[in-house]
Image 1 (cartoon, helix red, strand yellow):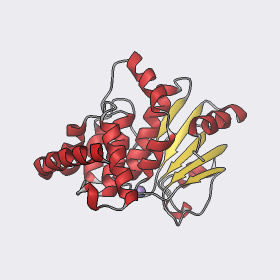
Image 2 (cartoon, rainbow, N blue to C red; image 1 turned 45 degrees about the horizontal axis):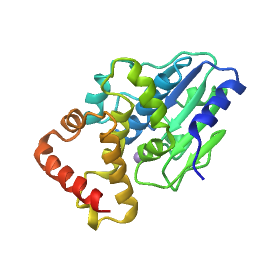
Image 3 (spheres, helix red, strand yellow; image 1 turned 45 degrees about the vertical axis):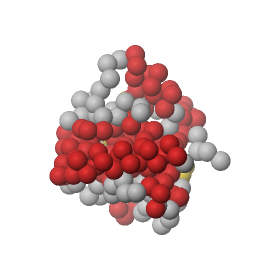
Image 4 (tube, rainbow, N blue to C red; image 1 turned 90 degrees about the vertical axis):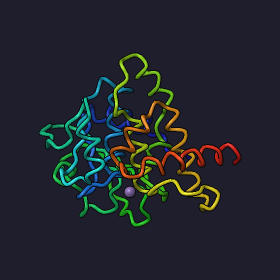
Length: 233
Ligand SMILES: [Mn+2]
């Protein structure tokens, strides 16, 4: 059964009477952790403007994703939030020992965990772990992109936005886009998700320049192959 993120999130905020949510990821964050945290933060900010959102990431973030995050026009995730009452959403972190911002998690009124590691400890008030290629892929699948598109159409479109970050997360954990037909079906699913995200106002070129600037040409070729193969599936 599909995990209903919007329902679970709203119930948590209302039940605990909270107006603030903090997003956390693992220590030494990579593109998947930062993409999942920042993507979900942008989504909540757009769809639920009544809530304060604070993504938090360690500044040991990988170089490529860091270029993206420092371009962010809404959030500065390297500042430690100092809120009093809040909920947390933890992304891409299998065990509490690897969580960046453990104290923030311990002092939260309520928590949701979104992960893709088979080794996830099952911590958190609500733990949604589905084994997949990337945590950002699970984020992509559980968010309501129609609501998001309606919400962001009203304001000026920002880049990076939720779609950009989720794209970055999937791209990071899947490495690149090799020949789709030769991939196991779980990987094919990730690649198809990437194609859909690109159609949702994600700026592919900005992302690629940040993540794998050396290989822009190779990537463009692979993307064309991917697009053609996805039409045949
Ligand atoms: Mn991951």
